[in-house]
Structure formats: C-alpha cells, structure tokens
Amino acid sequence: MVLSGFVNAQNDSIIISFKTQFENNLVELNDLYCWSDSTFYPGTFKIKSIQNIQAEFEKLNLSVFSEFDNRTEEFYWFLDGLGIVEKQNLIRYFSFYENEFETVLKNENLPIELKYLAPALSAMNQNAVNADGKVGVWQLTYFQAVLNGININKLVDERFNVSLATRAAARQIKQNVIQFGNIDLAVAAYILGTVKVRNALFFAEKRDRNVNEFLPEYFAETVTVFQAMTLFFYANKFKVAAEYLVKKSTPDTVIINRKLHFQQVSEVLRIPENELQFLNPQYKFLIISDDSESNKLILPTGKSDDFVLWQDSIYSKYDSTSFDLVTQKIEYAPSPNRQYTHESVKDLKIEGKTKIQYRLKTGDVLGIIAENYDVRVADLKYWNNIYNERKIQAGKKLDIFVDNDKVDYYLNLASQKSKKEEITMVEKIQKNSTLKIYEDLNSAKKIEHIVKNGESPYTIAKKYKGVSPDDILEWNNIDDARKIQIGQKLIVYLKE
Image (cartoon, rainbow, N blue to C red; front, top):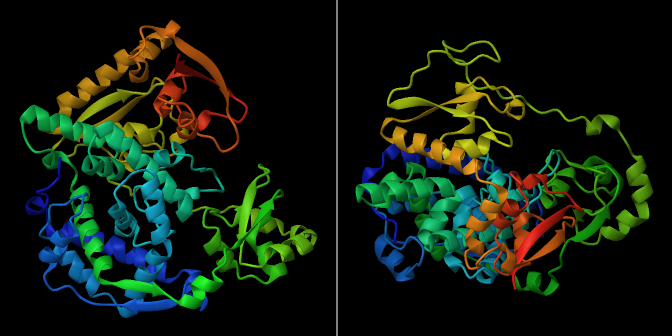
C-alpha cells in the first residue's frame, strides 16, 4: 500500500506551521557547541539547486512514500533558500550521523532512505522537543522510548542521545512493519501512533475509501517534508576532510558512581560546560545521579586520564545549589468557563465534537488514553481540570470530546476495553497471538527470566524466539512497562 493523495486536501497554513517548527529547531541546531569547535568534523561542501524537482525525485526510486507530492517542491525551495550557514550546519550534522543511521537501518532490514526521516522531523536538532512531548532528532514519544530500551526518569532522558534514539526508532518502525505489513503504514504509525493508523484503516474499510483520508493532516505534511529533505540531501553533499579520517578518534567515556554536576567537571578539568552538555544531552539538568553503578559521562578525547587523576577534586568541589532542580510549571491557558482546581470544566461545548465519558481504571495513564481517543494529553487535563496527572484516581470519569461522526466508534472502543478487562489471565494467555500455534498452555515451556540492568520488555523479548514485548507484559500481568525492576522474575512461555 502506497499512501498518497494528501496534497489536495491540505491547507497552506499546515506547511507554514511546519516551517515555523522546523525553523525553531534549526535555530537551536545552530546554537550547538560543536560549531564553535574548529576541529569538529571538518570538510568541504558541494552545494547546488535542483531545477526539475519531480523528475529528480522519480530518479531516486524510493521505497518509502514513493508517490510524488506536488507540495514537496514548495518545501524544497524553502530548504534551498536557507542562509548558507544554516544550510551548511544542517548538511554537516546530518553527514556526521549518516553512516550510523544507515548501519542501524540495515541491521533492522529497513529502507536506507528512512535516514532522511530524522532531519525531516527535527532539523537534526538533538535537543528538539515538540508540543506533543516528542523528543530528540527522531522525535520519540515516551512510550516508544521505554518500550525500546530507552531510559527516562527525572534526571535522564536518553531520547536526546542521537545514537540511542536511532536504535530505538529503528526497532519501533521494525515492530510496526511486522504489525502492519507495509512500510508506509509502519512509518505512519511511528509518527502518529499505532492506534491512529488502526482507526484510519477501520474507517477506510468501513466506508470503502482511501486510508489517507482518515489520517491526521500532520502526517501529510511530514511526508511532504520527508520527500523535500530527501531531495535536499541528494543535491547537497559534504565531503569529510582526509586528515580527519586519518586522525579520527572517539570521545572518552568514564563511569560515574557518585552524584555529579557538569559544573564540577568543567571547573576542575577546564572543559566548557556547554561542551559537556553537547556530548551528554541525555542529562536534562546537567546532573548525574548516584542511583546506578553504570552512569556514563562522555568527555572530549584525551580527558579520561585527567578525570581519573583529579576525580577526588572533582567530586569534592560540591555546591549544594547545583543540585536544586527548578522546573517551570506550565499551565493550560484559562478560559471564561474555567473552574477552580479539582472541579470539572462545566458546560464546555466544542463545535463539531461530542462529549463522552471514560471511567478510569487501575494502571491508566493519560498518555495511553489520549492516544486511544486521538486527543492530546493537554486537552484531557483541561477538559477535566487535572493539574497533576499522577493523581488521577481509578473509578473517576474523564470527559473526552471526540468528532461527531466517530462517537459510535469510540463508545464501542470503550465497551470492548471493559469486556476485555474481565478476561482472566489464563484466557489472556490462551488468546495471545504468539501462543495460537500451541494447542494449549501445557504444550509450552515455561521459564523464568530475571530482569537485568537496562533491560526492557523489548530487549527481553528479543532474547526468545517468537516472543513479543506485548507477550511479556500480558504473561506477567504488567500494565506499565516502566514498572519492571532489576531482579524481578518474569514468566516466559516458549514452544517445545
């Protein structure tokens, strides 16, 4: 299935909004520390413009989104018209990671041209965070990340680490290919979430129409930018300096086993704090905690010996104020109908939408509910006056506003979920697709897996043939992948 036909239905403001987001990411890309370092990835550029956009696109013979979108030309000329410094930074930083992108994609047996998805989503800004909470060059959601081995907590978000995020993104797209059997739909599910794609397929089949008519507009503009970005990097190249390839060295890595702030390292070893931040973007507040024996700090080449020599001075250079976390509290914009905290937003009406209610259950999180009902977490919080999503309570009802023509579908979805929860654990296992090949549970070999540091349902599932991350969660009655702990015993069923 090739997804096509998005262009005619789109409004010009869509591309404009994407351009604004792209420009903001590009500004942040230009502020990265590496551009102030003359030794960072030196080389020469080959800059040129394509005249016949569609003809050149067809020559590429892409296997992802291969049907040319007429508005791709508009965004290509936007890229072509960037200032020379912005253009060169984008090209050079993409080139810096291009080989790594290709290697990871090949390992997952995915099309190599998917390497252009990262710059399309984030302008290669490793610090990119969009309004929906997607993070990093691959714009991973929280659940895509944790289900693919990415560590996220109060102090660490490995989605900002380009290398780790690349592997997680490729794994997620590979899982989507297995689920949907189609690369275009797999990428759509990566960008929008699997629920939105399944919903679109349901409505397309029910109404005998093209699936793209039921996909959000954001996906259409992403396809447009992906195609334009592919053409942009096809026309513009970066050749690495020969002397860099000869002298190329990797940064040093040291193990941190005590609480540490970047400022302590910076002041003792005379390494600019913003350089440390560039090398270690996953540490959100420049703090490395002491709750793990394997925390790593990347240092400039040749600095590991200095760290070992001066580590007592580094750790002792302690300022308690460095570890005070100050985060900005962001509130949803008030409205005339807004009530006091803890009260519902009364008498709220939204044109073209109908209010339905969802009863919260143990283990529910707003992110999953929002994805299931194709709304934003911010909307759920506003509609229900939720100021702290961690304090939602089982049994309470959430107001959710859905499109008028989809009310029956979402009401049916809620009904199906309620019935599904009444199924016992054994019935769940028997219904699991991985075990359909078994006559019954007695024919499956039951083993115990002890969770090790850094393992996730995804990494555990990969160790056992025919086992998926969902199987791991189902068999062990786990409703949240984040709840597995080091040393925990998990049940795994294997075919004899």
